[in-house]
Image (cartoon, rainbow, N blue to C red; front, side, top):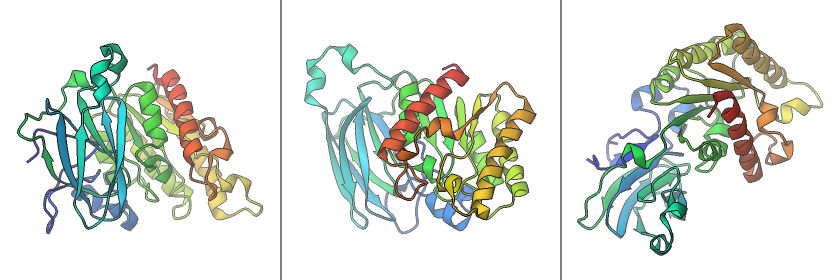
Length: 328
């Protein structure tokens, strides 16, 4: 079913009691090994995309949500066509029409990282079900390799990285002209061995790891070192460039009264510096979190999660840094 589509950053599963296909970012066998929170945030389709090419001028997509109301963002090539609401408990119908002005401009305006012939349905934060793609009898096929970015950036981290359909990893990938595999786990980035193995096994060209902030409350520094180093070793075994960031600036750096979480915040960042230094591997690079979140005014009022400006700033900074260290 749906062999004529590409499911990017998504796993295709059947869900008992539901029609269509379920589109989580982690397979069921891996989800079952995560923390309780990890098991449901890994079900979210965030940043995943349904991609296809068709000569049809009109297409209808039938979607629903397993968990909450949220949005999907529709792109034709690199160009945003609109945002549509998907409501929990109902099938949402999204009607696509080829943008009229695409036929009125020179091809070079539309040329980009994606072919302007590629439809892309990008998910925000919800667990998506796909029921049908109706091209009214016209052929539908997955995009070919030359119709999408040649290289892929993998990201793994906390809610900051999990973010949303337009979070800082997506901004960075767009600026770098790469595809994005976002495997962030909101509140559940615990570097479990099974998650590490899954992430390392994926098809990617560069990896970016944002580790530590979700582990500072429930793990000792020794536990963190062991898990983080195991993950880093697995991705390095792929013999591809890897960047690890220290923890981004947050309220713990400015506490009036120091807490265990604040102490671990500093300790975990130093552990990451030490791991990178001790490995002395030319493929492994350290990034300072303060160079990515270069203005704490980019945080929302909880003083840990970026707001819209923060994500835009971090995406631009991360793209600049990765372009330099990876030579992209």
